[in-house]
Length: 367
Ligand code: SF4
Image (tube, rainbow, N blue to C red; front, side):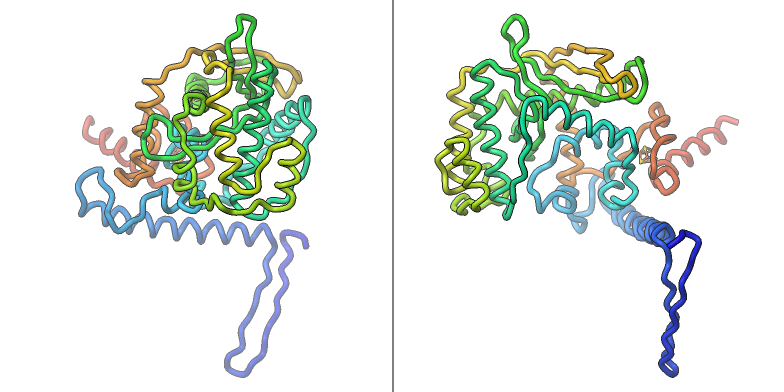
């Protein structure tokens, strides 16, 4: 149906006649977004009202913590959640509340294709039927097992899953490392691939910092796994998994293919965590960010970064206080207001409106 077309269907039922208007997808999305924005404004208003009564900076006990609201079911934060939050916490929250507005640009799709092509240079992809969340995590731990064996043989691995509780800050995190390989002096190097639509310029300092946080989280979790800082019991508790769950047929077949002996999630998790600890692979000591031009179809820049655990811990600590409900959501500060110009929530963003108002009042007072 063309976007401008409308179909009217009238149900005649005596006095209770109703008129049903069937609208196009585009119109429906517009209406839906408007409704979501209205709901959001109402919920924000309620939330700020409650907050006015609470201590400054604290959140009312009546509102569930963001972790419970947005990630409680999964039991962990993804590194992508944290990276999005680092860019703008308010924007990340809107993405949870109004997911339809999340952009899926051509640039993002091309980027995904490049990542997939890189992965397929090393592996054949296979489809597996995942029946339960225990199956999903069993597949992840099998992936860890097979890739650790490759690393121990000094081979390059891609799409390496990591998980854990960085710096013991009470929140479980999961992510996937683009690439791990050994450099010419035998150090283990983490490579993060970033695709760019341009032909040569490096991204802004803010984007570089965001990538640094991302790669640091991966490094800390990987190194913790090697040091045995993650145990089976906490994995099951945090992710609310049943260790005794019998793995489904597809997952069992996958295990057989890789000669991994397991019938339950507990067995494969235990094997994987012990495999990390007995590995001869060194800890990650260098981070490399490769910028790949979508136009030139090649790597155009490589940035080498040193690990900085103190910086990462302090950033994560600040970010987690949002997730655990210890403070209100914050948006970007005035120096970074340029981020709002490309934000899909700029028209409805309460934080931005509040900051605009503050600026106006500031201007009035200085006249
Ligand atoms: S408009 Fe600015 S402050 Fe608001 S969500 Fe977007 S980037 Fe964040």
